[in-house]
Image (cartoon, rainbow, N blue to C red; front, side, top):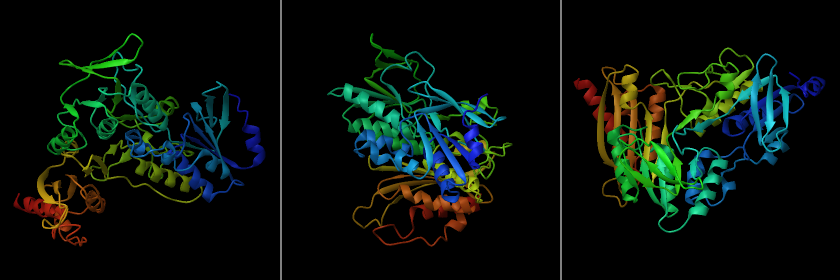
Amino acid sequence: MSMSESARHGASGRERLVVIGADAAGMSAASQACRLKGPEELDIVAFERGHFASYSACGIPYWVGGDVTERDELIARTPQEHRARGIDLRLRTEVTEIDLDRQGVHARDVDSGAESWTSYDKLVIATGARPIRPDMPGADADGVHGVQTLDDGQELLDTLARTRGRGRHAVVVGAGYIGVEMAESLIKRGYRVTVVNRGSEPMSTLDPDMGRLVHRAMEGLGITMVNDAEVTELLTHDDGRVRAVVTPDAEYPADVVVLGIGVRPETALAEAAGLPLGAHGGLLTDLAMRVRGHENVWAGGDCVEVLDLVSGQERHIPLGTHANKHGQIIGTNVGGGYAVFPGVVGTAVSKVCDLEIARTGLREKDARRAGLQFETVTVESTSRAGYYPGASPMTVKMLAERRTGRLLGVQIVGREGAGKRVDIAAVALTAGMTAEQMTTLDLGYAPPFSPVWDPVLVAARKAAAKVRNT
């Protein structure tokens, strides 16, 4: 292997940090390391195969739907800003190989095809996740889109611009967070939207009884929900454009198809290098986000698995919140400091129109898989004092461990003011609190904000009583 930059590296006397992937985790790591070690100590090279760096992938559905009007509003820091701080950011450059023995990466310029090797002293892998594409005829047809990067979002908007018009049909395959958010975005764009979902209810991150509330809200928006349905084929026109989505029972016309069936860790590069992967295909790291067994290699973001503090098991949870924290921790450690990432409780929030959807901790099937026995309660309450104008209904479901009463999970579905209440439960889960202990939490109260007993505390009271009685 020839590393053309090795001589320059050696002559400079500086360490070199190479970052693969220039979004949340990668550029947070690079920026933090840059703050702690200046350019006289650390040479930073970051590779990104796309056109953009440091952007909010979570904001793409809102850009597609028109709530965010300009793509650049989703960009937190431009390439020029990174370069001005001394980070050698190389866009449209894909790393194709990692040589752990010689500490180098092989990269290819996507546009010109030019190839080169770059040596490193420390390596950060932040390759993210890739949308799951079903292995079936037509899955790669023109008009079929995953939505993971800004490039993906731009390609989808280009397709919508070509197919816009009255009576146009969109099919979303899958009804997780991305699927539900994209369905609403396409409704806003004037499409007739059908969501084909293999589960019994949308939002498999919730228990089915809570997912049913989301189902009703989606139908209220005019979205056609097709549950318990497996897509078997995507049909195309003679010119290769998608025209329909096929299930065993029906065929749904489609001018555009959005894949919302989830993502997998993008770890093919790491796997080829022999780095350790977990049961979900994500890289395994220690608490410092260092790849296990590899002193000079770190990983963070959607390509890693993290410890679930409630179940004690490794999980793959692709969220920008975690990715940015991973990057900060990696950058601190690379820069000579010390930081750890202890794990997560699995908190997420989304919405369909004005319906807010939130969860943290374990679902029923998660708890069973972890070997836990538990009790569940579901309560109906309101976002404000019942007599105060604007009070809206809210449903809270809580899981508590049998005998100990330890909080295991909370799911909330309701209108304005419902979603962020999940943060109360997220803190309680992180602290290992019981339902009984939660009932004494000193939460803020005034009629415009909450009933005297906050809905989360009402659920905690009922859960604690159920645990005592069993």
